[in-house]
Length: 108
Image (cartoon, rainbow, N blue to C red; front, top):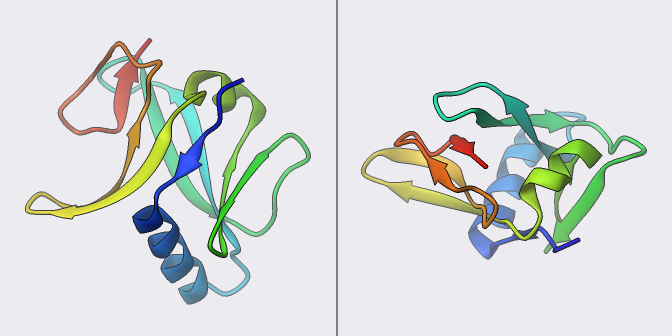
């Protein structure tokens, strides 16, 4: 299965937000059904990895992806953008055939 990676910007932001939340050590990223394109990304802070999680580490930052979401995110790059629209994690997913304008919903 293709690797899921974190950019330097994503790692820096994960370090910032986990440092500000007591007991939270990682950012959990999941793919759920829903959104305007069929699937959507869900982000939440986690205390520790689950047994089936892929643990992605970069420069002290940790992201977690569950085994089902890994299938939909294989080869994806997780980035953090700060632009005129706002700040958000952005996932460049080679498996997505289309996505909506919000950037958190996609189809395969």
